[in-house]
Length: 167
Length: 167
Image (cartoon, rainbow over the protein chains, first blue to last red):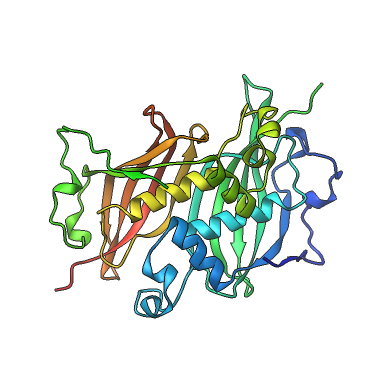
């Protein structure tokens, strides 16, 4: 995988990147904060390897069969796209204290990822909800995965469990 | 991976298994139909390999670090659980014409998958919505992934695009 930073040069919205570089706690998140990850190029072999393990369908495994499918060519499993988005977020400098722990969310595959596509994730904090009973809370984050043409391939809203800053 | 059929012996609800064994079209689905997949045992190496590729966090990669994390031990990435659920559905005899094509859905991780867990998926058709413009429709399906103790590790509602039967 090829990783490359792709930060937009200017943006009026507060970037999480501007926050202190230490690990982030619940108190460090606020609605409207945005975050852009590095990017990853998805190779044809990556697509086939993931599919062989987790989604062994012809349009993920074989070019000729894929050409005859509704996709018209080889495409990545949606779960492959989702897993790559996770990797981009984990390897970014989002650095949530205790790790990036999702409790769930919603996901939409807008169009397939195809061989050679270069994906990155653009995120925005939607909501921060402290728990009443635990020393943590839930950060809801919209995470849109875009290809090299800026087209969304996946849109997700993920709920992350984030610890409060220790007293 | 170890695959084993685990069909409950008796159930009052109509099983998709009882439908004709040919490929299934939109007309073959109806709310209330249920479906149970085979099962898969998740090994410690499977967990670490998936994590190294897609979710490289200490609690997915290293027993000692995981013991100190909020999970108290090594756990699988939620995306690994999701991808295994997909494999179980793809390898089942659900056999949707044109393949199992998800357009999106909701997902919740109820508890982590741990090394040695044996997972299977129990599904129920919630809703069938024909498209107004396309020769297909959307089948909404609840898919709950359970471990060997019958505890849900993941609950999802997935929307699948399913073609109409050709005239």
